[in-house]
Image (cartoon, rainbow, N blue to C red; front, side):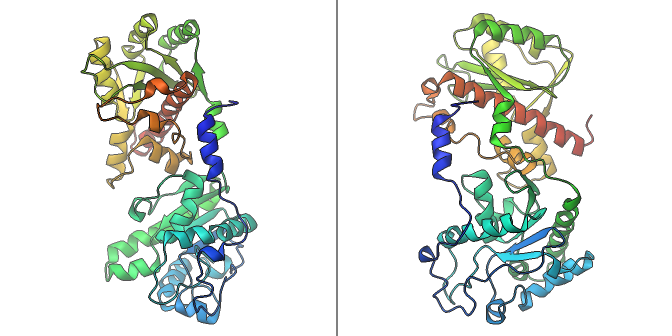
Length: 404
């Protein structure tokens, strides 16, 4: 899709992550008294797993070897219990120098060392990358997703398919975090299960979706006549259908509240989006779709679409059968993981696809956004992406829940 999201493309170019040498001048851990500065990766990597800890322990630094400190014994034991040899993993750190005593690491230290980690992954080409602790997650996840990583707890136990690295990214707790949890057998059990699942993923190639793949399956229909033709054809079909609205505010009750666009994605097909504002003939064609007995509707926070449909179109959708927001809450009740943006990343490997558009969709002081400033092609492409991801995430969740 040439020229799509020009602003977003520029933002992504500014934030590109380059592999190679660490930017030691921005960190200075190497000159802070460590005995083995810039510790190179260890382990053979023969088993296809890379383990990334936060930084060398005091014992690691003193002996110039990976994971030899007392806290690492629990890692060695867990890997051995899986029938694996830690020495056959590729071993490295998010920060390859031990921080000076009394000086905790900061995000700037992680960022300065990120090129070394990316180079290590490029050289080893692992099938699975286990990220032990917050620093490891903060080093690698931003290279995939963009935006803020947030708390480490929202990531532990996830298995993220990375198209960039051709590997699964598996964040979990570090041995040091486990030690801080104290004598808590349940946390240790969870941690061991995270490692077991990570090692098992070697047999399953990650099917991460790249941005070109995403936009290649999203069609913005700018012609009203063509949009109406596609809607008529969709009304005759059957199956699982995601639908999504773009509006100028959150709630439809105000006279100024307007439906601007709608997108649809029937499972197994590309997504498309059409403009609704100023198009009464197009809006009228939504009813045969949303009231069809053959189309099973799904979405993320689908009550939003339901309310707008009832208020602005005058009827309720007929077969709303699955909501990924509720599915996320049911499958995993951690906070801040239920958005389609987060679920699409951890399940499908889709990067931060809305960074450019979201600034226009944030409500202002009067409750209304700046959707009118968006180029229609950009708006419709983004709208279609939501439906595409919603139907794919919904199908995954439904499978996990035993829903056909």
